[in-house]
Length: 403
Length: 192
Image 1 (tube, one colour):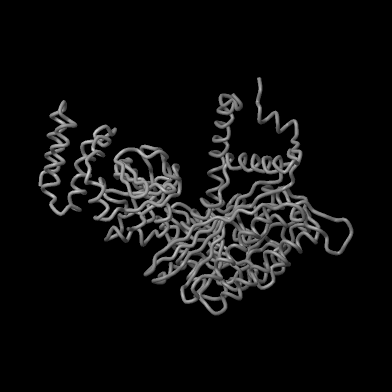
Image 2 (image 1 turned 90 degrees about the vertical axis):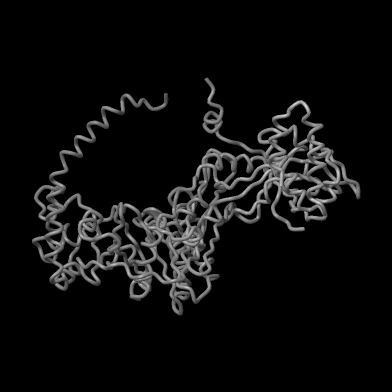
């Protein structure tokens, strides 16, 4: 038996006990967070100024409309289209001598209303040779292999590119929403993990270029781009409340609190452990959305130009979801309304999750059996061409599993 | 002659086809045909089913809030792409050149061969001989239902349906001489 569940059970019991012990404290934190949110809502201008002047170690949401407003879902149009893409990949296998990877993009286009129709398809692409690396265009021998986390980023770019390809073919007179899964911020590129030329290639020359074209498309029609995050773990809005609770003005975590341990002596820790979804679950009614906020990510602020990522929270029957959109959607009220109405409508039709995203995922998914079959096909093709296929001893041992 | 679907499984005695249109299989007992090179293979539709295209995804009830059944599909347009209608046909004969044979063909139909619904003229020609009945009599499952349905269907293509059914009944009396209960069951189902 690979995993000894008998040993695991007792540890899980301990986990549950710890969670229960922290529950009371969490409730107090949530209550205080809600109280702070309501009191700050009366004068968001001064909170906005304090946020702007503060230096914090966590991401703080930018405020646009306010803090505690609730927006009811506007009516959805009679005829409309929802399009979604999702992707999955087969990573480079370092135990195989064949360097290549595969990205499979699934797309769902759902037309509702008078001419209800659907189109579901997948576009698998195998990458090899020059496509395996990102080269530093300035010269030198600097290259970055596209694998692991970087392949995840590349896949996000491909998902967005597929949205743009399909969106271009939509009838312009029909209101349309394009949905991506997860964040519109390419978190995989943040921090110091990759050199500048990698960011340049994937973000400037990749993702943002696609957003440019989608923005262009949106200019003369009712077309919105948004992404959907189920069960979000973000705390951008709670962090804005932390700034409000901070006794220093402006707040400067490194200067005033660098020696203090979290949850010990920092006033802002009175809302520790609370996430935005906890807050808005209490605040919003079913189908309502929060005000629109701006992501506090410094990476996003630095590079996303006019595509600055905005977001709102949406209360559904079972959860609070986070919906992100670029500035050119967030600034047009009719597009925010369209995103709100159609995401809610999709979740209703999909029993709690957008149908279009679910169908795109179904078209994108690569199973373990597919993975094995893919490598078999690669090996057969090479063998037929008279090329030698080597693979590592580790891979062989996993395949054969002898006793 | 209308193209209705495409073969997805085939043997010398049976084939299964996927319909181009959801929920529109040819009627149970009707005569269909597919081509294998120079041979035309005839089958009697013996089963049809609409299922999910993926074995792991099952349809769920969706119509509680809808007034009409069509609204379920209008509200979830992807359904038409996630469901499929298949039908099976029992092979009852074939044609080589201009000659009709009421027994099994030498080869199965090819996968992806188109399946056509036979028109009245072709049904009439094919049912001039009752030799195909022995294949249906030996069929597995609901053979008696299938025989009755195929005879009712063939009768519609005849200039004198009543006379056709009377002769068919006599043929069956010979084939099922030892099984009077079965014979009665079928006769009750083709009586007009």
